[in-house]
Length: 112
Length: 116
Image (cartoon, rainbow over all chains, first blue to last red; front, side):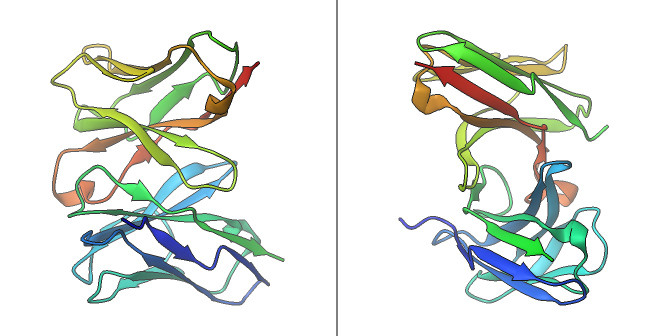
């Protein structure tokens, strides 16, 4: 069974640009969560989607948004990029939003 | 109240020794406590998890000890191996529904180094 797949693995952007990250969950999993990982703040929850609906949201500004498609694949968008948005963005999936969650290997985003 | 505090930040153990990492939480609504292992360049991988109805869970060389009254839980790695060298995260999640959907609250991580 394939795991959680995130693309691309690496991205380099400049301040002010926007970026879209993609996540394909484990087959049969309908819940997708996104996390930001930085050395200073650790792993922080961004939001969770289930059946194309955002059900839960962390404490991040509106520049961070997401969506989910009917096949459960999810995308995350960050607009007006700031230097502080440099991080590893992780996607996790579960059957229905309950635990356990399984993580992908992340997208490393660097802002110049 | 949502924090999970993890210690130590780093740990050095000799091969064959016992590695112990501790976590403490405040939110009594938490009812699921997993440990994740992360290698450089990889995402966190679920190692072992426990719910508050048991005080200990063992899977191979990995054991979670849980103290509900103290709101603390710990990971013990027996017979530690160089291949166990990684960053370990504890986490917690509240019961099903509402603000718990898909949300884990993580500790700050422990960098474990096992010397051969």
